[in-house]
Image 1: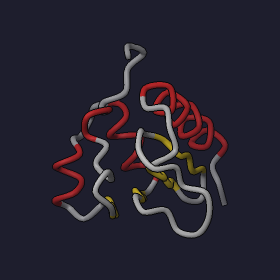
Image 2: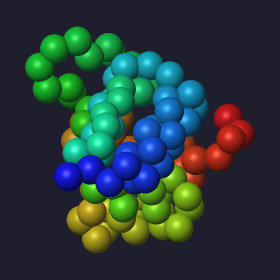
Image 3: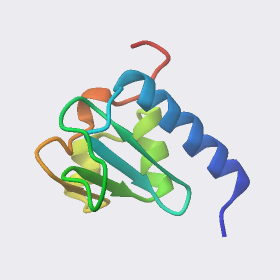
Amino acid sequence: MRDPEVLGEVKATLALLESKAPGRAIEVRIPPYAAVQIGDGPTHTRGTPANVVEMKAETWLSLAAGKSTWEQEMSQGKISASGVRADLSEYLPLTDKK
């Protein structure tokens, strides 16, 4: 079951990520809340994308707020990332600045 407050936070932070990294080369999945496609590179249209990042909502919200780093979460096995572009560290933490 999805928590409505977490859903709102996940969607808002993913929207900010989309504004910072427009494109469709990387799929970012925060199940069961949302998924977006971002980043420059080859456009994904069907099947499993070449670049996929997936994590739990609590991990994503911690990264977005700057409470943890990409390296910390990766080393703890909290992020599943595949593909040459599946590193979001350049966009984190998220702020209102581009």
